[in-house]
Amino acid sequence: MPASASSVVENAKQTSETVLSDASSAMKSAAENPIQAKNDFLHTPFMRAALPFINGGLAGMTATTVIQPVDMVKVRLQLAGEGVKTGPKPTPISVIREIVASGKIMDVYTGLSAGLLRQAVYTTARLGFFDTFMKRLTISAESKGSKIGFKERAGAGLAAGGLAAMLGNPADLALIRMQSDGLKPAAQRANYTSVVDALTRISKNEGVTRLWAGCYPTVVRAMALNFGQLAFFSEAKNQLKSTSLSSRTQTLTASAIAGFFASFFSLPFDFVKTRLQKQTRAPDGTLPYKGMFDCFKQVAKDEGLLRFYRGFGTYYVRIAPHAMVTLIVADYLGFITK
Image 1: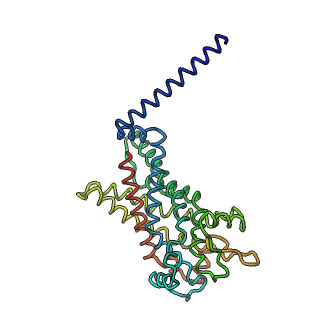
Image 2: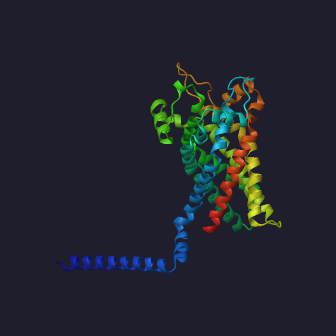
């Protein structure tokens, strides 16, 4: 064998032995001190960048599992009496009673797979982006000898919500379709078996672009919700630091405040989003609403302005606990992985 080739082989052998030795040492060190190994892993540059997104997704999926039945009732309330000003006025109790009377109590969890997928995409992105934006804004402010204020928090919340909503719209649309399917006559129901089935069939029958139906109001709704939720949570928590409340109580109080403002600012857009995502084409190819502004106009004219806030109590019960669970879990995950 030529000297140069022999040298290459010898170097490769030494490199592989070094890698194996390092790996063996790392495994031995991890076995002897697992806590230190965990901390070393969590503080790698990749994990520091990824953790806000991972923690956000886990927090959102946990909250959705808890709140899904309330979300189901909220969607049914928004779709009742469509196009009729004096139509039916169901209550959360009457909706639940109707579901129970049908003998399908587990229908309250219809669309859970879509809800979890939405959180895996949407909440992962929005909390991850928000945390990333806030860290960069904080570093920028500190370099100038100042502190970030409500304006910066609001901007970070609006940007994070809008970007995340665009990514999560297909799962959101599948969720609305699955939850509204039971309102149709039995012969007209799609009977989706899962979120994958819903996404596949909608893409095949209506076109891939249909997965982004209602994207505009979804983005606006997400921006409004995140403005109310993340900006007010961050601001409230900052204001509560000077109080005698415990850290846990501060987080709970701040998340409750955030839940109210998130509900108030986002419900009209959530209402329109639901209507647009539920609609399907008539035999002549037309749709009931041409877009967000047309939906606002028609509902205001035919059903009245207060219709946009129908089910506010249910929506708040859905948004506030979801916000509280999400923010508390994300806060806790952030604490144990810091």
